[in-house]
Length: 392
Image (cartoon, rainbow, N blue to C red; front, side):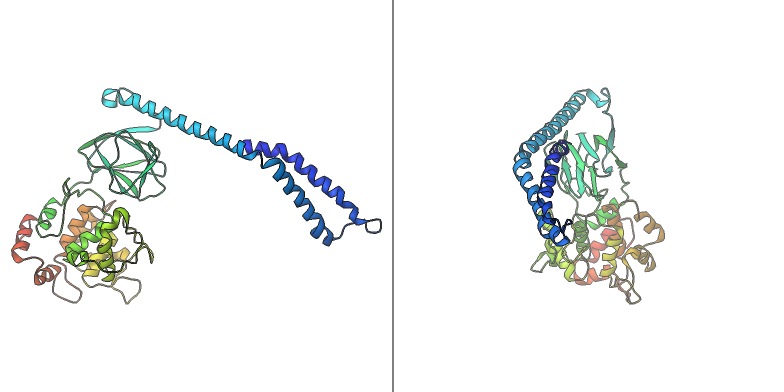
């Protein structure tokens, strides 16, 4: 507004310059030619007017703009710092109250007691503060407004700091502790913890070398990123060791930084035709994997071709239906797996079912292939079926 007022105040100078220039040059018409020609206006009059205006801007306006801009910036900076300080004081005051229930939650904020596996999503600008317990980022980064840093996928939130979801629908905050006290504001959506159904299948696949947990357990309630999905898939089909040997060219330039651990796996999966990128040079390793994409990996491993047209066996959006069609899943199993989010829990069940799926135009199953290659033994498979509650 100050800048607009400045220009408004200087407008008479510019108008005066134009008028003086026009009057000075108007004599060009002469007594016999009182009206200036179009050529004269374009080639002489207008350039002179522009020259005068440029001179006024250079001599009168430009010298005072930096000072005005600096003053405006200082005012904005002070306002932002003052607002942030007030917010921190409000949060600190509330945090001093035991139980967080005595001090009213600030306007616009909702206080939650959430449990492990609960997911917070929202629109760009949704804010999250964890007061007790633990939470981590899933997907695209969030912004720590307290210190101005970026927090990337799988990183833990610092208690007491205010985080903002970025302009990306693929961002969420997941509760990692048994319980957590959380404040959330502005367009949030809180999804309750996902029921863990497939611990037995995870237990069964673990001794086969097909599934690995973390220091916090299997984390079956967590969503699966594209990089994690590739790793789990290659482990399932017994090709992880070959992939980790490396040496293959990786066409994707974004499997770096926090996702660099998956570079050899992604390069191998691409070379085998198991995966594609979201473009010729991007794989999006930190984006969440969908059930359609994971089933597409399984079907490709079984020899089915994905694409549009009669020459292909299925299109990836119909991958779940194809899994039912070839007998890998029942309709009930497919419906159970096709929830709001695709999680590690779902991936465990799908990959377990894939062991008994037949290759295209063959009676051999994926389990048969793993047995024949020596990746697993009959004793291991029999024991795994017992753990999963199935007979061999």
